[in-house]
Image (cartoon, rainbow, N blue to C red; front, side, top):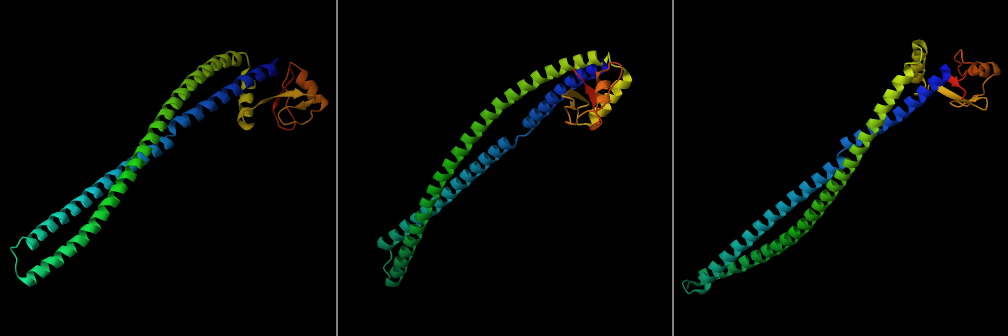
Length: 232
């Protein structure tokens, strides 16, 4: 019966369509590396921030040490006895006081830089751990997706061979009609008849159409959706 052969072909094509759709979904997942790229970018930014914090601390330490050295030299001059002029001594005392104030501010800045470096290091460690976790999860997912794709492609190949066998028994004119209907009806060209109605659209079928659908000599169509009708 031609309608039944077309129904068998429809079953194979529908199954193959579903498998190919799943393959496309999996390939899209493989191509979508946004989560990994985001984690890598986060780790890179955290590393850059850590290095900047290191440089800031080094600069703060150098500045504070420079002020300490200068303060030490100035105090040595002030208290060393080499300067006896009251005005010069007064100027040195004022410079010592100024250097102490600057040193205090520099040491505060140094402490802040140390704390900032500690925070930057914590952030870097967290970002690197997150990247590691994302990579591990990604590798696991990719292995699973690739395995599923390989399995699906084997099924698609088997369905392709089965399809060839079915198509070989269907007249070219009927096959062309089937393909046109599939393209127009969302991939479903054949509908089963159930309780006197078209399973695809649900429309009740007139008696003459039902009688034609039971015939093995011709193809009957649903008056509502235009699909080929098949009675099992």
